[in-house]
Length: 191
Image (cartoon, rainbow, N blue to C red; front, side, top):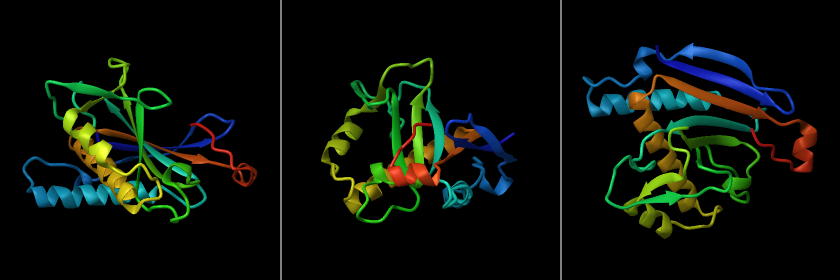
């Protein structure tokens, strides 16, 4: 069964389930379909995920577990693999979907769609990345306001989602709701 689960998080309360639906046949990957038809099916699935994000919610996060020693970006294995660190541990957060206004950096936007890729418990260390993807990342602008950076993160997130979409049967999305008071104070709460 192919499932899309949507939960809601309102601090300080625990997560609560909003919906759990079967992913329809026309939004799933099929090996016998052409590459183009599978791309169209993925776009339909991505549109369904983006529709979960509502303006009253500040963040909608899609969670994926990268549970192999392959590169989390391109899924290849090379002789030399590197560790990509993140300040919160072994996870990477990438923005996709609609971009925030130009005067707000992606990482500080109060609303949006995010992909959070974590290592599974089996690989508790840093996120593995190959030399080619590491070199490409170093060439990428570090300016979160830069349109090229925004597009690169969005493209990377969608590529990672596409690879997991081909194999995944369960997707978890969580919308984090901030109160008006939290937003006025500029608080960003961890989910």
